Amino acid sequence: MNDPQLNETLRNALLDRVGGFFRNTVRRNGETCSVCTGPVASPGAKDCGVCALRRAEFGNRLADQVVPLTYVRGNQQQKKHQSAHTVLSYKRPSAAEKSVKDLCLMIMAATSIHASCIAALMNRMWQSVTFVPSVNNPGPSHPVAQLARQVAFNNDADNRLTLDLGPGIELDPRAVRSDRFVVPEHYRDRVAGKHVLLVEDTWTSGAKVQSAAVALREAGADHVTALCAARWCRHDWESHRWLLDSRTEPYDAYVCPVSDDICSAN
Ligand SMILES: [Zn+2]
Ligand SMILES: [Zn+2]
Image 1: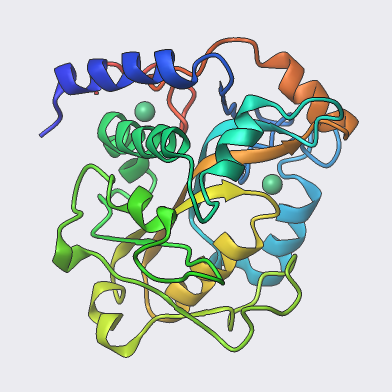
Image 2: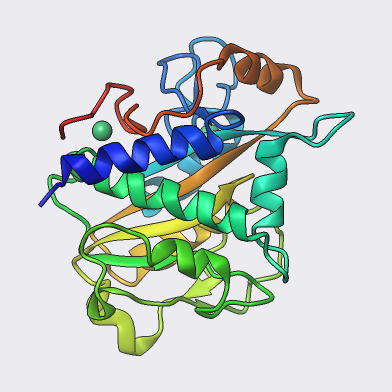
């Protein structure tokens, strides 16, 4: 089911389009968060401070795994970095077409090349695909819905679902809340007992992504994988800047976002 030639084409297209400004995320025990791949709270820690607190509060109701593909060089003082421009311009009402296409290709390539890596932890491929709805435009016309449509496998009309906004959607924007999103009644059978792939464009604090994961788990999902095109890092924070500066190679879609191996012939 995997197509090596397609994977090679996707990889080369991405090197060309985003290689100059996106960098692969990295998983390094004791250095980067086992959840969000940001810097850990203190040297040797497993997680960053935010993810550790959430784990303590929500435990296994959070996403089983979070898979951010790239780092964004955000909050850069002088000129806005191209990676930040891409993830910001992609969701403007008059979305920058190149930015949408760039992120779409990243989701397509990652799910095509690393499908079995994403499945490995759960010992099961994802069976349903959804996305984190945006507050102002939660429906299928938001570009994040377009990202979700790029998922390479198990992504037919009857594998897809859309989450509704819940009563807590606008409350405590930095907190994980189980009432931020709701699984609609008519989609319950696409969630209950399933491994759900949850697509998001950008992980900033991760509050929205993890709230969506909690809603899915509470609706009976066995497993949730949160796939994020980009992990926002703050250039004005020293630990983030250090991590950003340590990533010098162009974004390579063969580098595994799950294991850090090279997965060319998956
Ligand atoms: Zn984290
Ligand atoms: Zn892989």
